[in-house]
Image 1 (spheres, rainbow, N blue to C red):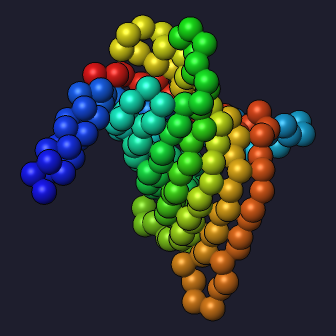
Image 2 (image 1 turned 180 degrees about the horizontal axis):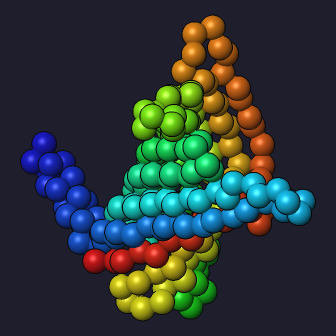
Length: 192
Protein backbone atom coordinates (compact mmCIF):
# COMPACT_ATOMS: atom_id res chain seq x y z
CA UNK A 1 0.00 0.00 0.00
CA UNK A 2 2.86 2.38 0.84
CA UNK A 3 4.44 1.73 -2.56
CA UNK A 4 1.15 2.50 -4.34
CA UNK A 5 0.71 5.77 -2.41
CA UNK A 6 4.33 6.73 -3.08
CA UNK A 7 3.92 6.02 -6.83
CA UNK A 8 0.72 8.12 -6.95
CA UNK A 9 2.43 11.00 -5.12
CA UNK A 10 5.41 10.81 -7.49
CA UNK A 11 3.09 10.86 -10.55
CA UNK A 12 1.21 13.92 -9.25
CA UNK A 13 4.48 15.69 -8.42
CA UNK A 14 5.92 15.03 -11.89
CA UNK A 15 2.75 16.33 -13.58
CA UNK A 16 2.77 19.43 -11.38
CA UNK A 17 6.43 20.13 -12.12
CA UNK A 18 5.70 20.45 -15.85
CA UNK A 19 2.39 22.29 -15.40
CA UNK A 20 2.00 25.92 -16.42
CA UNK A 21 -0.79 28.38 -15.69
CA UNK A 22 -1.87 30.87 -18.35
CA UNK A 23 -4.18 33.89 -18.37
CA UNK A 24 -5.57 35.74 -21.32
CA UNK A 25 -8.60 36.27 -23.43
CA UNK A 26 -10.00 38.53 -26.06
CA UNK A 27 -11.96 41.75 -26.46
CA UNK A 28 -14.15 43.11 -29.20
CA UNK A 29 -15.54 46.51 -30.07
CA UNK A 30 -17.42 47.59 -33.14
CA UNK A 31 -19.99 49.91 -34.56
CA UNK A 32 -21.94 49.47 -37.78
CA UNK A 33 -24.63 51.21 -39.76
CA UNK A 34 -26.57 49.46 -42.52
CA UNK A 35 -26.77 50.73 -46.09
CA UNK A 36 -29.76 53.01 -46.48
CA UNK A 37 -31.63 55.19 -48.91
CA UNK A 38 -31.00 58.91 -49.04
CA UNK A 39 -33.20 60.79 -46.57
CA UNK A 40 -33.46 57.80 -44.19
CA UNK A 41 -31.09 57.57 -41.22
CA UNK A 42 -31.15 54.07 -39.62
CA UNK A 43 -29.87 53.43 -36.12
CA UNK A 44 -26.25 52.30 -35.83
CA UNK A 45 -25.32 49.24 -33.74
CA UNK A 46 -22.51 49.40 -31.20
CA UNK A 47 -21.13 46.31 -29.47
CA UNK A 48 -18.43 45.64 -26.92
CA UNK A 49 -17.31 42.36 -25.40
CA UNK A 50 -14.79 40.86 -23.01
CA UNK A 51 -13.76 37.19 -22.79
CA UNK A 52 -11.13 36.46 -20.11
CA UNK A 53 -9.83 32.92 -19.71
CA UNK A 54 -7.59 31.01 -17.34
CA UNK A 55 -6.02 27.66 -18.04
CA UNK A 56 -3.55 25.07 -16.90
CA UNK A 57 -1.10 23.20 -19.13
CA UNK A 58 -0.54 19.68 -17.85
CA UNK A 59 2.23 19.09 -20.42
CA UNK A 60 3.17 20.15 -23.97
CA UNK A 61 0.03 18.54 -25.43
CA UNK A 62 -2.84 18.75 -22.92
CA UNK A 63 -4.31 21.79 -21.23
CA UNK A 64 -7.67 22.66 -19.73
CA UNK A 65 -9.27 25.92 -18.76
CA UNK A 66 -12.35 28.04 -18.51
CA UNK A 67 -13.47 31.13 -20.40
CA UNK A 68 -15.98 33.68 -19.15
CA UNK A 69 -17.68 36.13 -21.44
CA UNK A 70 -19.70 39.31 -21.50
CA UNK A 71 -21.02 41.02 -24.64
CA UNK A 72 -23.21 44.12 -24.88
CA UNK A 73 -24.76 45.53 -28.03
CA UNK A 74 -27.12 48.45 -28.55
CA UNK A 75 -29.18 49.62 -31.50
CA UNK A 76 -31.23 52.71 -30.66
CA UNK A 77 -33.39 51.83 -27.64
CA UNK A 78 -32.84 48.08 -28.05
CA UNK A 79 -29.95 46.46 -26.17
CA UNK A 80 -28.70 42.91 -25.64
CA UNK A 81 -26.48 41.56 -22.86
CA UNK A 82 -24.88 38.09 -23.05
CA UNK A 83 -23.11 36.32 -20.18
CA UNK A 84 -21.29 33.04 -20.86
CA UNK A 85 -19.13 30.38 -19.24
CA UNK A 86 -17.18 27.78 -21.23
CA UNK A 87 -14.87 25.12 -19.75
CA UNK A 88 -12.66 23.34 -22.29
CA UNK A 89 -9.97 20.70 -22.87
CA UNK A 90 -7.29 21.45 -25.49
CA UNK A 91 -5.05 18.87 -27.20
CA UNK A 92 -2.02 19.93 -29.27
CA UNK A 93 -1.50 17.36 -32.00
CA UNK A 94 1.28 18.98 -34.09
CA UNK A 95 4.07 21.48 -33.54
CA UNK A 96 6.36 23.26 -36.00
CA UNK A 97 8.92 25.67 -34.51
CA UNK A 98 6.84 28.18 -32.53
CA UNK A 99 3.50 27.26 -34.21
CA UNK A 100 1.13 24.66 -32.70
CA UNK A 101 -2.01 23.09 -34.12
CA UNK A 102 -4.65 21.98 -31.63
CA UNK A 103 -8.18 20.73 -31.21
CA UNK A 104 -10.40 22.00 -28.41
CA UNK A 105 -13.45 20.29 -26.93
CA UNK A 106 -15.76 22.48 -24.89
CA UNK A 107 -19.09 22.84 -23.19
CA UNK A 108 -20.70 26.24 -22.76
CA UNK A 109 -23.69 28.09 -21.37
CA UNK A 110 -24.89 31.57 -22.38
CA UNK A 111 -27.65 33.67 -20.83
CA UNK A 112 -28.96 36.51 -23.04
CA UNK A 113 -31.26 39.38 -22.12
CA UNK A 114 -32.85 41.70 -24.66
CA UNK A 115 -34.15 45.00 -23.23
CA UNK A 116 -35.86 48.12 -24.54
CA UNK A 117 -35.20 51.50 -22.88
CA UNK A 118 -38.47 53.42 -22.43
CA UNK A 119 -38.76 57.20 -22.66
CA UNK A 120 -39.19 57.74 -18.90
CA UNK A 121 -35.78 56.12 -18.08
CA UNK A 122 -37.31 52.74 -17.26
CA UNK A 123 -36.12 49.51 -18.85
CA UNK A 124 -38.57 46.95 -20.18
CA UNK A 125 -37.18 43.43 -20.33
CA UNK A 126 -38.25 42.06 -23.66
CA UNK A 127 -36.97 38.47 -23.51
CA UNK A 128 -34.38 36.15 -22.00
CA UNK A 129 -32.76 33.18 -23.73
CA UNK A 130 -30.68 30.34 -22.25
CA UNK A 131 -28.32 28.50 -24.58
CA UNK A 132 -26.01 25.55 -24.01
CA UNK A 133 -23.62 23.98 -26.47
CA UNK A 134 -21.04 21.23 -26.76
CA UNK A 135 -18.54 20.69 -29.53
CA UNK A 136 -15.03 20.85 -30.91
CA UNK A 137 -13.05 23.45 -32.84
CA UNK A 138 -9.58 23.48 -34.41
CA UNK A 139 -7.04 26.18 -33.70
CA UNK A 140 -3.54 27.52 -34.16
CA UNK A 141 -1.26 28.91 -31.44
CA UNK A 142 1.83 31.03 -32.16
CA UNK A 143 4.37 31.52 -29.36
CA UNK A 144 5.36 35.18 -29.80
CA UNK A 145 7.79 35.10 -26.86
CA UNK A 146 8.46 32.76 -23.95
CA UNK A 147 5.49 34.26 -22.08
CA UNK A 148 3.06 35.44 -24.79
CA UNK A 149 1.02 33.24 -27.14
CA UNK A 150 -1.36 34.39 -29.87
CA UNK A 151 -4.20 31.89 -30.21
CA UNK A 152 -6.88 31.61 -32.88
CA UNK A 153 -9.82 29.22 -33.01
CA UNK A 154 -11.50 28.60 -36.34
CA UNK A 155 -15.00 27.24 -36.79
CA UNK A 156 -17.14 24.87 -34.76
CA UNK A 157 -18.50 21.32 -34.97
CA UNK A 158 -21.14 20.58 -32.39
CA UNK A 159 -24.62 20.79 -30.95
CA UNK A 160 -26.41 23.88 -29.62
CA UNK A 161 -29.79 24.28 -27.91
CA UNK A 162 -31.50 27.61 -27.14
CA UNK A 163 -34.68 28.13 -25.14
CA UNK A 164 -36.49 31.41 -24.50
CA UNK A 165 -37.33 31.89 -20.82
CA UNK A 166 -41.06 31.74 -21.60
CA UNK A 167 -43.66 29.17 -20.53
CA UNK A 168 -44.88 26.71 -23.17
CA UNK A 169 -41.90 27.30 -25.50
CA UNK A 170 -39.79 24.42 -26.79
CA UNK A 171 -36.04 24.78 -27.26
CA UNK A 172 -34.46 25.18 -30.69
CA UNK A 173 -31.59 22.88 -31.58
CA UNK A 174 -28.76 23.03 -34.09
CA UNK A 175 -26.14 20.48 -35.06
CA UNK A 176 -23.54 21.16 -37.67
CA UNK A 177 -20.18 22.27 -38.92
CA UNK A 178 -19.25 25.94 -39.44
CA UNK A 179 -15.79 26.67 -40.86
CA UNK A 180 -16.61 30.10 -42.29
CA UNK A 181 -14.38 33.13 -41.91
CA UNK A 182 -17.08 34.72 -39.74
CA UNK A 183 -16.44 32.18 -36.97
CA UNK A 184 -12.88 33.07 -35.89
CA UNK A 185 -11.78 33.93 -32.34
CA UNK A 186 -8.45 35.51 -31.34
CA UNK A 187 -6.91 35.48 -27.86
CA UNK A 188 -3.64 36.64 -26.35
CA UNK A 189 -2.35 34.45 -23.51
CA UNK A 190 0.26 35.15 -20.86
CA UNK A 191 2.12 32.01 -19.72
CA UNK A 192 3.42 32.09 -16.15
